[in-house]
Image (tube, rainbow, N blue to C red):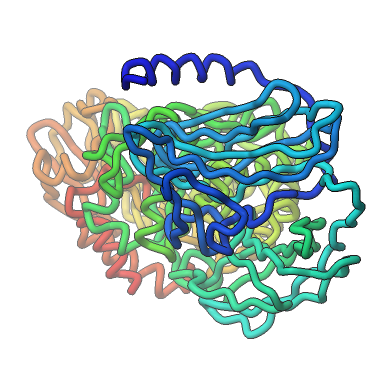
Length: 634
């Protein structure tokens, strides 16, 4: 067959396998393949032309996988013949990686199934068939395609009733594992043995959904873990007939330590990443790495998920997980493929976490624009919490996110829209989230309004504090060109000052008021804006001058990134712990490395948990504001 004809045939096969069978194997049936994960080399398998071997990487689960190399004359098929029961439904599945990788079965006595995919990382494949009325064996196979490079396969399974005319009961579930010798990076698992009518061969140990080991005893030492991180474990038994039984109960255990400060008792150094920044701003997760900022913070809030119909929802599917990154703008320098299930910023954050194992990523929901959905969510907090958990812990990206952040602007008060849910609504919402997320991170961005009768007074932030790991107190945006004629005033004053337009509109007023209401200092982070707010038509250099409107900004009138302002309108003075600049007829206020250092000293003096900022793209290319924040907190 010429290569051209082979490619034509490949297209025909793709069309045929799109028509699948619908009969399913019974969920309780065992995997009847021998050596399905290639942990025993190629035992039980036959590969054409000596094309197959086992490797230790890449693997999907356990410690081994199949690698086979097609040639111009051979597809590198590896197969196994197995006894089956006539007239029965079977599901064939496995995980494969490579260009044009197929799995299928022959000799089924009916329509022989096959399916294929192309993938740069392990992807699942599955197909079904029903054996003919006299079929007692079938041959299952996996192969690549002519001259398409090596492929890998792992954790193959043929699920259905075993053949041979004998009855062999699968093993029982092992006991729920327990943990001992727990450190910041390792722990020891122990479980009681499963039982089987013919004997136990070994046990598969799973961390989350991934098989991490196959052992013959009832103990396993897991290493290389991340400090201050919660893990789940289950164990399944395999008998001497290669049948796997039901899973054990789930063990949930947290390693000791603080994971670099993202939770526990450590200092929080947190930055927001805005998903829409990948468009006009062309700011990608890679920039967090190349600026040097990734090694200086320990938590990223990913903004924003939507709140709609009483549920958490994806905010921008394209930016979040559909946009394919080029090698040039990806964190690890590898281009995405068109068919990978999760691309976008979420996958890039996954790559960033691989470079910085202690880094926490929290999915933030709401924000100024989408806070209008919270009143409906607050009407049924339990249902809302369940929807959020199901989204954040979706298997496609559960490894990326360490928890949830709620940015409700504002409970029982007005932001873009007004809420009348009552003072207890926020507390009830956070209680439901904590109950659903368990030991995962649960945080919230809250108002910095320290005025008498202001937004802090409108909701029970003290009562809700018991349910959160921390609050991000939004101590910025106090003043701006929404008051077009001024008076000019710094948008993020640390303290009050003579002539401040509104009493209580400063960071210290908010922190002291929250403390007085019972919010622990070590559950509050001080907020920093990586941008400035400004007016035009201003003649007075000092704060308090009149204006004619908002100063011009790159993306929005009256607001500009620090990286632009530092040269466009350098600081000409400071007031109340922040900076301002008067340049021509424009007047801008913003924080600089120097004022951030002062604010971090304040945070430490007040016993705060740490600090956070909005948002990464406002900083310089070498991350000078992040550096100031990180150095200031120590």
